[in-house]
Image 1 (spheres, rainbow, N blue to C red):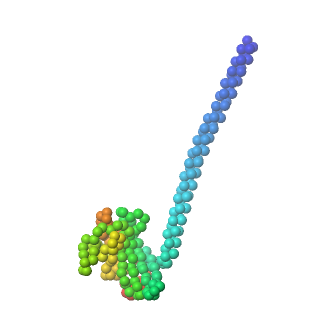
Image 2 (cartoon, rainbow, N blue to C red):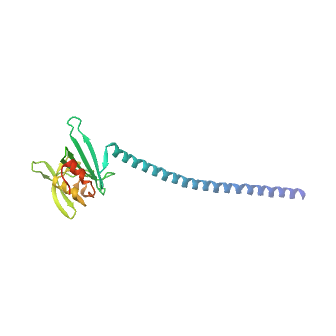
Image 3 (spheres, rainbow, N blue to C red):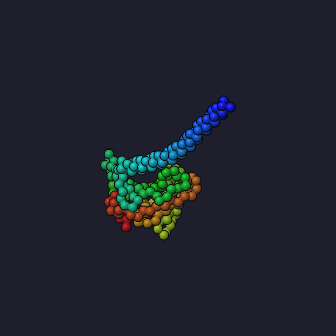
Length: 220
């Protein structure tokens, strides 16, 4: 009788011990799950911080590239770049205006307009959509390839034939260029390789004295 009670007690003790060992195992699994959950949260926070840091670095690099190229802001959304030919000493001033919008086929660059003045006179100006242009659709006066564009200047609009610079830009006429500096709204509808596109610009705000000095005319 005593032997059986002794064995029964040992069996009960063994059961308690086994059940006692299982409890920490469950707690350990819950602890591991909690650690994994908080680890994912921490990793997500680190990823966001890393992304923000990279964005700041990219923006800084973009600003630095402007500075390295010698560009200075000259009112509104305009930038000015000054260079001098080492051989002829000709002074070249380029005014650059970026569009307000991205185009359908563009990646990270907006369309832009570049106005070039040399030795105090307006030399030429270019509309660069930063997408592949469609083919030219009419000949110019001298037979040069041109593309027909529709230009809106504030509340008026006109069609123009701009000389086609193979594949990437259109040479603007000087009359439209002069209107550009006086406009508040400037839009260009043209045909890209992917179909019709409209580039929208906000040209107001440029320092007019810079234009007078560099290009020889008063945009007012």
